[in-house]
Amino acid sequence: LQGGRVQFLDRTLKPSYSAEMTEIGGRVSGLSSAETSLADVELRGKMNGSSPLEITGKVNPLKQDLVVDVRARFTGMDLSPTSPYSGKYVGYTIEKGKLSFDLKYLIDKKKLSSENKVFIDQFTFGEKVDSPDATSLPVKLAVALLKDRNGEIHLDIPVTGSIDDPKFSVFSIILQVIGNLITKAVTSPFALLGAAFGGGEEMQYLEFDAGLASIPESGVKKVDALAAALSEKPSLKLEIAGYVSPEADREGLKQYFLQRKVKAQKLNDLVKKGSPAAPLDEIVVAPEEYEKYLTLAYRAEPFPKPRNVIGMVKSLPVPEMEKLMLTHIAAGDEELRQLAARRANTVKEALLKSGKIDAERVFIVAPKGLTPEKKDKVKDSRVDFKIA
Image (cartoon, rainbow, N blue to C red; front, side):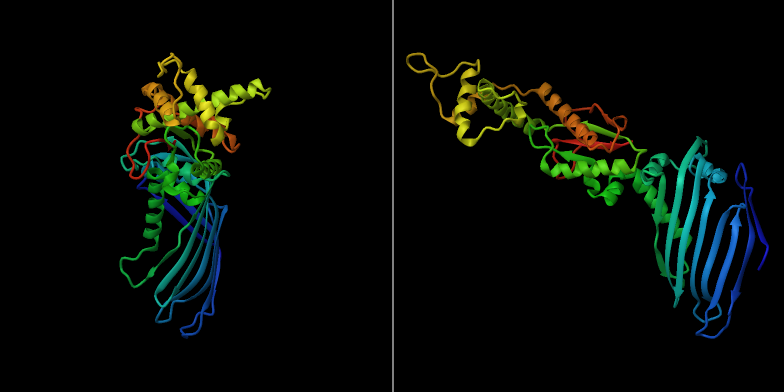
């Protein structure tokens, strides 16, 4: 075959779509009905004058059981001319993008095994199109989730099956896989990110210890994985909302405030001895020092304290001093709101500190309430993430 030409026109679309394959040439050599023979296939052409198509391999369509072992490669087809299709079914024109694929198909004893590697480069949607047939899914978000930091989308879709099955269709399976992938991207974006970067669905939240806004050790890896995922998906933005568990965090906050009062007494000692001031959360009170600095903190509190017969503040055991101090420490709704805000801000700072994400891509959002939506086996003391 030499000098072949195929013209395609679809008038069912408004506007219509047309494409042309030119310079089609190739050969099938060694064709025979002998059971052991395989014919060589070589076919080449160009789509719309520039995108090369190549099909090579071996076949024997004359055997009782069809044998096919072929590879098809197609490179750099401009996608913007396919806007009539994307406008109708997706709801947007295509501004730019190139499509390439590398397919390998093996049929032996009526069993199909195939590899379908699809590469889409710099895919960008254009103007919105009003179409009753368009999907309601947020496809722009799906594309942003599938793109890597170089603006590339790589899909690897293996398909197997029996060609004897009348319901078996390679094209239908591929479309279904791609459709499922897009649906998963927009409905469970963290599952998609987690599959690539580790963490799974658990990437959509980060739990905290009661009363604390510091990221626990178990959450550090999650922050690292999230930073890596966002680094590879530069079109994505992240929203962070902080929450609390009113019961657990109220008690946790009281314990936290108590420990800060104790640490403040040790910091006073250190400063008097000439040490530089340091953040309270960085001060460490050793077990053997605890009673000493707790006593100083207890005596500094303004609430009424038990006194002895001569009017002096009585010395109390550690549990009694702690109990009295906790009773007079306030941890109301305002303190809980501040804790939720500190948690969100702590995570944002950790993500930005990684150096992989610009500050313009990370947003702290005001939650509708103190407590988040309930999740099975997940603490209310957490921050929730949302991809936008």
